[in-house]
Amino acid sequence: MKLKTMIVDDEPLARDRLRLLLCEDSQIDIVSECRNGNEAVQRLRSSPPDLLFLDIQMPGMGGFEVIESVGVTHMPPTVFVTAHHEFAVQAFGVQAVDYLMKPIEPSRLCDTLGRVKRRIAENAAFLTQEHLSEVLGALRGVIDKEKGYLERFLVRDGTKEVIVPVDDIQWIEAADYYACLHVGNRRYMLRESMKQLEKMLNPSRFVRIHRSIVVRIDQVREIHRDGETEYFVVLADGQKLKMSKTGWKNLTATGSGVLSKD
Image: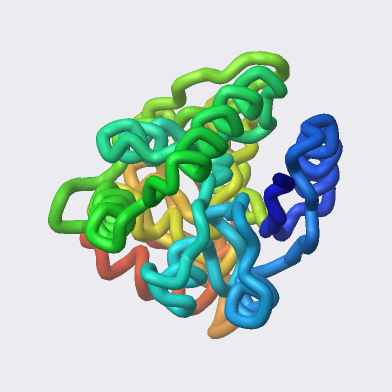
């Protein structure tokens, strides 16, 4: 019996890679691909598959919101796909939920498919309603403000992954669906929105000074305001960054004691 399979991911290259890998399995029949959460919800409600590969982080409606919209009891067996760092992986591990890290490795996918097929063949619930609810709560809880903020990121650097302590980050800038971490003379790309990063980082140490820029407060050496519309900051290393009026209010409200120049 072939498993009707759905892929949900906003990245075309990620969908292509997963599709090519899945096509090597004769028991997998890819019946649909969705580019965002809204498409996924509509398809899951009208033509639910036997198996779902669901990306966690997507613009607008992410994987968590898809599950909440469809309803836990109506979800098919689900494998989460993530470009997230260790905090998500640890949460998955605690709850024993299958997941795949990007870029997906063929051997890891093979192992995952083996587990999924066995569970489906045994008519065992891949995730009970209670279990999946616990998983979603655990994943959200990792970045919940009441439970602390991230202390490090796991990022890809060429063919390897490296740990970047939050204390080493000088500033962060938005780059489409990614964020660029500036660490000394190095740059690391992270698949996170600026909105999500704000939730992960301690606001007493990081502040958003522009819709596309977050800075570590103790790296700010000067704040410049030229009239009512021109704002920028100078970092400890001399880097000059643009700042919005709202960003100026956010930064000056921190009471960080940086030098202000009009």
